Length: 230
Image 1 (cartoon, helix red, strand yellow):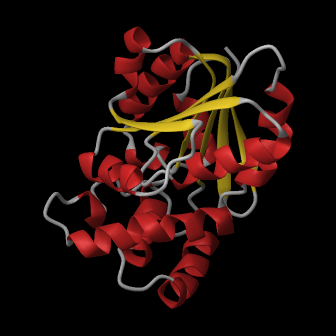
Image 2 (cartoon, rainbow, N blue to C red; image 1 turned 45 degrees about the vertical axis):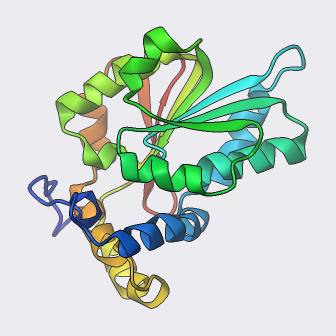
Image 3 (spheres, rainbow, N blue to C red; image 1 turned 60 degrees about the vertical axis):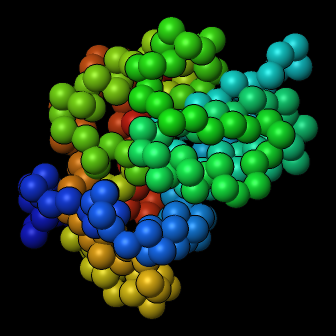
């Protein structure tokens, strides 16, 4: 429900996107993203229901994370694939050099790699991926940028595209505003999280923008999932 947050606050910018933001706070933000993602993004459920069934014995499962940030989800998926006996090749890309520098500074699984790049660069540079996904990327985008991402992702993915993001909600913002300052210290997460919620889409807004063949699912808590099967 969005009684107060009726419209996307597209004029707001996140502090961590400032090229001159405090570097120590930025590194702590990337590190704390792993806690935030485990708490609210429900990727384990998505992994079990959508990614495990895609695995094959004859060739590795190729997975691409667009806008990977500090790379925590690539590391998590690599760990889950290993535990499930899934042969996988994982790649995280981000155009932000600070994000890739942080991702590459942490231990990298043998099955994963990181690259500073825009998604469209991979169309000519990489073989197709079985799964293309993003996490907390959509709310950064204008409608036209979202359309471009959909078109690019549908060219990169052979089987499935999954975009997991925030669903704009008054209750969700109130819950985050109360809890985040208690959990995330000396980073940008508490303040930028409010900005992200205010910039995020509702399911109806998203459904009106995306091309035919894409579908939007409501997820708990205060999540949405944009799905396409090329």
